[in-house]
Amino acid sequence: MVDQESHGYGVILLTFFVAYVLAVLPLPQWLLWGRPEWLALVLIYWTIALPARVGVVTGLLLGVGLDVLEGAVLGQNAFALVVVALLSVILYQRLRVYSLWQQAGVVFVLVGINQLICQWVQNLQGVGARSLFFMLPAVSSALLWPVVLHTLRGLRRYYRVN
Amino acid sequence: MLLATLAVVLLITADLRFNRLETTRSLLDTVATPVYWLADLPTRLGDWSEVHIQSRSQLLADNERLLQESLVLKGRSLQMSSLQAENVRLRALLNSTALLRDDVLVAELVGISPDPVRHQLVLNKGARDGVFVGQPLIDSDGLMGQVVGVSAGNSRALLITDVTHSIPVQVNRNGVRAIAEVTGALGSLEIRHVSATTDIRPGDLLVSSGLGGRFPVGYPVAVVSEIERDPGRAFARILAIPSAALDRSRHVLLVFTSGADEEG
Image (cartoon, each protein chain N blue to C red):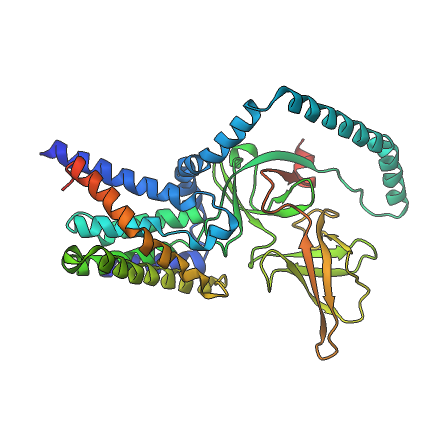
């Protein structure tokens, strides 16, 4: 039992690590604004799947990690991911019974909130975006949600993380 | 939840208002190195295969071209030492300080900031190699930016096209001083607060002026591309394109100025 639990943590940590790598992967110029918020997507999935194990504190720690990677103000992504995790924890029962595209709609809103908070903190620093392009990741993340959901669900079932 | 919010607010305040988290950040940066390493892997594999799958004829052609280039550069630098000596003598006559030659350290790019509004690079040299905060960064074409964060094996540099960066420059032709910063379109610099009557033309080369003590004198920064003299405005609107290949250079040079020279 204990063994199985620690095994599960390994899988969760691995998916977060992959999300980190994807988050800093060099992209061509025209794709930069549309980079999906991988970490937020993976966090939303695990919060819906295992709300007792992954939640607000996970979001906080992950966010600090992302801030360090991006060279952003420490706390910027942490703030955003805490809010995303909190909303997912509140909504998880509803989200589980939603259809795939309804879920994608909610993901759009959650990542949008994530982007708004990041933008707000960046404006405190004086480095805000000048157009609404900063909301593009909400669209790309929502479109990628089915892929993320099926991949992570497959992983969770295969390794029996629960 | 309350605790998490409190922690986040404390973090943001500590970092933004008081700059208290420099050491923590450099420590965490060290932990983050493998992530950058992995993210950079596809590019490096591409480079590697490019090097190893190149044909013999292409290598020979490259070699030929580089030999010629080296010959031309050597020819150009033949008179360098005598000119340098002359320069030192003339400067001594004028009672001004001697220009010191700068030492450089070659660093490789391992990451770029994923956030499009932040123009930052991650380099593979850190405190171990003597990199320090505020160190200027150049490539073969001009000045790129400065180092803003250092961890043991990595450093983080801010490009001159970041909105939080500005740099003192002077026109190479006549020595007019100004400050270049990013205001409008990203990727181009704007020279601000230059009166409409100042002698500055499109095509003028802007070099670092060394004022402010951060950047060494005389590195190319940008070329003036557009000037708009609107009588309705107090200042001319001047745009310039950075000389350095900011989005292409993979190998960059970290410059050690006089301070490091005294040690060595």
